[in-house]
Length: 160
Image (cartoon, one colour):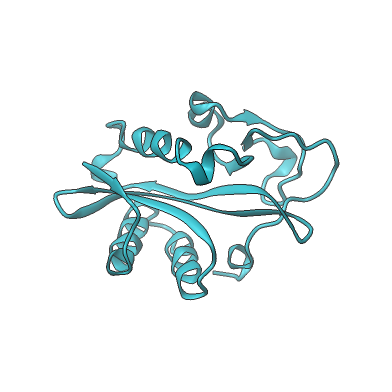
């Protein structure tokens, strides 16, 4: 298994992976396609196993108004056949060690039990408009003390 930045030639494989990992939703695959089509600045990595993309992780800018205030971790997926084998954990640990990620506040909307293992903590500020009462909204290096609704790249809200 190798972790690397995806090439443009891998984009269709990433879409295929996201569609298989989220079989009831095309949102994640379309989100990443729009990131690429619009050249949205993202940090992304894939796990490759025998020339197949088996896992994917992306980080995009988080906003307080017009100002970047950190990064959102989304989407994050492992091919169903490879889930529950530690591959997602390895990919997340790898990403968290990268220069472009390791100093920035990180936010994720996800399963608290999983993300806490990597240092994420529940946060009440900023407010995530996608999560009532911030029950599944977590962060690392979050020093926010003011109340605001955290912003996402426009692709997140385009009715994908």
